[in-house]
Amino acid sequence: MRKFLLALPLLAALPLMAQSAPQLPGVADISRVAAGTYKTDPSHTLIGWRVSHFGFNDYFGIFGDATGTLNIDPAKPNAAKVDITIPVGKLTTANAGLTGHMLSPGKNGGKADFFGAAPADAKFVSTKVEASGMTAKITGDLTLNGVTKPVVLDAKFSGAGNNPFNKKATIGFHATTTIKRSEFGVSYGIPVISDDVVLDISVAFEKAS
Image (cartoon, rainbow, N blue to C red; front, side):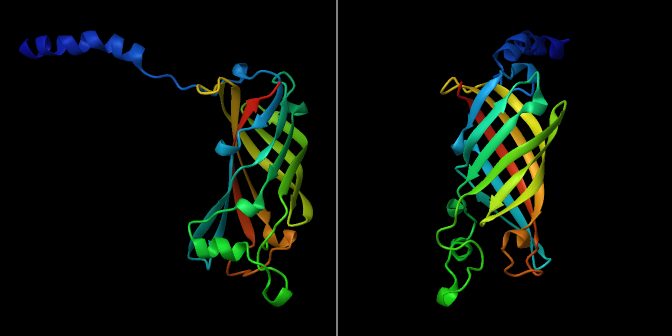
């Protein structure tokens, strides 16, 4: 009985605690998505890349500050269009030396090992969307290192709501794909550094109109 009496204040407080629990601004609820044009939130949009290093482990880095647009109508998801520009020159890794190597010019005027000192922006432009519930396959043209190839993104809707700071309607997606870097003219170190590059994409779009 004494234990029960001691627990009464806690039991009484539970409803209040539940009411005061913070609510996430973004919820994976498609009904929250409003039709229109959206622009990326560059500070919260990241494209991660991952390669196998010598077969021992994976090494990864990030492209940030991506810009672009999404045109979407939740009633017609397959008509959605996305156009993203990725500033390759802003790539980063956990090692300053490796980051510098990837952005270094070729030796003695030769071809750069990776992207060179002033790489052109990469660009993805969708050509087809096949949506099914919360997921979609997005086919598009990826231009990287001056080469354009078709790729397919496996995308998943991750949340929608209003950004609590700027009050803009925001929607988010995650996507993955794997490309062969040799097809884009980046062949340094193959096969001890893998030709396959896994891309892990996290993007936030804010409503523009």
